[in-house]
Length: 352
Image (cartoon, rainbow, N blue to C red):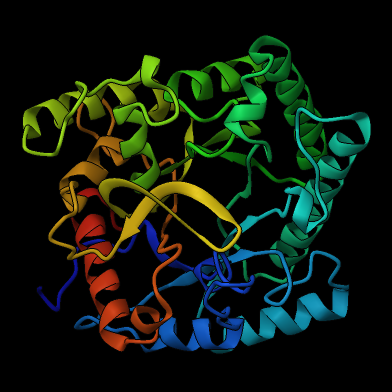
């Protein structure tokens, strides 16, 4: 890789939540604290490239959703000292983290919106402190596809209503929301249902789509929604033309809504650990079983139908959820991740 990089946008971020997601519960690996995740990210270097920032999960023990103003200032100072900006924030909208199902009872939905409000407050404060120039608040429906399927039409309407209320909160704080396309969330478990939900809420200036390459591959395969599969049944990765065609269909539908993007690899399987449901299997960037050409396939999201860069996301993030701790503690892991991120930016980014 050349030491002279042509592009400096989108900025390159690393997700901090892989230190927590799928970890810390009985039978799972222990969590990795925020300071360690920041250190691992700061030490990564590929020629003259480093990570520009981090995306955060607003949940203990990383960042309390109830953090006070002084705590937010200390958090900003800690992250700034590493040379990082803060980007997107994950709101803890799930019942085990203090939230509630977006299609649940009135109390459940109130808890969901309350968590979004708290996340938006933190995001706004970080912007005011000058450390968060880009990013959104990430949400999902906080309910399972199985529960959703008991009454699809009514449940989809309830989720849309809850997301609409969350949009009102976000707008009051100058924030935008990104709904994470992931097969383990009811009403968002297929690409067609995800698109339907975005259109039902119909707040494109406030609510957009968060695309993760590992999860959206499973959209094309029809995991949890066989009726919405784009790839043929039994696809095993050998037919690259079929994947390219499927990704074109998928991205043509969801790219116009995409405001947050995760670079990732997937081997075409699902994976879960701890209390986290099985979802897209995040693989190491050089995993020989990976089905994606990370650099080329990222372009399906980052370039429009005419091949022009959309510039819809001013930073992109690596998501390595549920990697084994032994891999996460290796410096080579993060150098490989950074190398993949730089390649995406060089292929599909721009200079300012």
